[in-house]
Image (cartoon, rainbow, N blue to C red; front, side):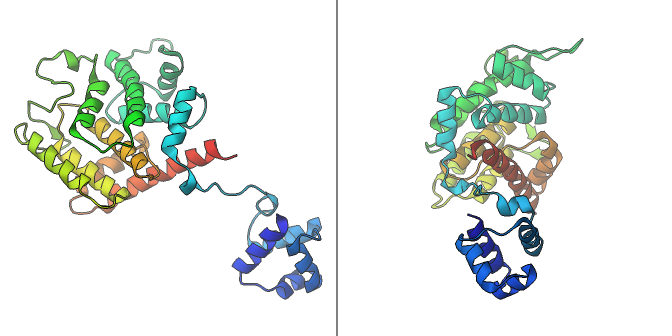
Length: 309
């Protein structure tokens, strides 16, 4: 109600009804009636009130309430929209944005438009003489399946089996899956690296993963900072031959949903900041934390846009 908003903004500014009355050129009793809702201010008074409160006229008159995201179970919303096959809403766009960005960070040349086309039509869109890598297409399609599986088990405790299933779903049917040494859905057999960071040796990887999960699952409280810490430690292990970044980022999303934290997707535009954050994390956690918090703000805006009445 307009009267309630006038009162709220007045009190926020630590102003009295007399002070507002003087600005508007009316009696204090008139301001009291405005706030009680028994009298409506005229348009000139509304303009003066907006200027006084430092807001727009639309903000003063708009009756829409801010969406309280803390009261929304994002996992339930995504599961419900998935079951409904609802188009053009949060689940639909989460699938597209997630698949495009997480794959693009790893070198996929598919455009966001092509990613959307694959999700919506199960076919690929080509422009003129565009050439697409078959694995890019397969891994994009696989990522849609990966998100669906993640939503199905998001409220379960994180285990090695779940993490290995993430990798299997992501990489099955790719050229890598036809290499005997690649071990889809199993830990690496050949040494690898994360950028220029040293990672766990193949023989040490199973032990390091057990240790990581024991630490994580022993935590009494999990906030976004513990999830980011897990991600850094996971990427330092780099347990799979390839696909570690994408598996790591789907784990982030799952664990946010499980712990009722606003999830986030690392966008391709944040890639350099994300890599820097991982590289510098041991000495300076802030770079990676800030990148993740910015990504969280982006997803929060998606939630507000699609779920606001």
